Every structure is written in structure tokens, then in C-alpha cells.
Length: 78
Image 1 (tube, rainbow, N blue to C red):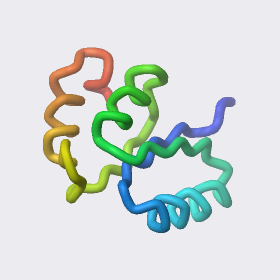
Image 2: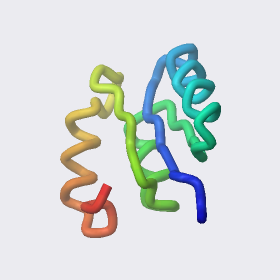
Image 3: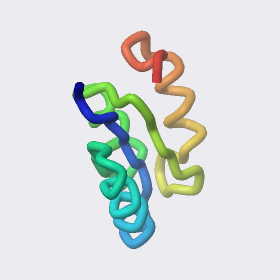
């Protein structure tokens, strides 16, 4: 069975790495994206099982990313 795929979209590298370290201890496959735009690209390339999404990000905030994901038929199951 494949490990659960988790996409962490977080612009603060220290926070992102801390989340990654905690999740990797649980045998999860973790991918990081440092912006909303990068996170959407990563999610569309390989649909994750779970997204951990920061709300306060420059440019495209977490609410905008969430709206985009909900409107994308490929990502509606996330």
C-alpha cells in the first residue's frame, strides 16, 4: 500500500520544515510548496491525499488556493 501523500503549502520555511519533520516520522510522503501558486501546480501534478494549507501567504492566500482547488474537477476530492 502506498503511503499517504500530504502536500504542505506554507511560505515560512521553518514552519514548513517542522511540519514535514513531524509527518515523516509517521511514514507519510510529504511534499512542500512555498506559495499558493506553487502549491496548486504541485497538487495538479500529483493529487495529494491531504493538503495542509497556510492562510496568510503573500500573493495568493490560502483562501484563494482553496477556492481554486474546489473549482478544479481533478482536485475536488482533496
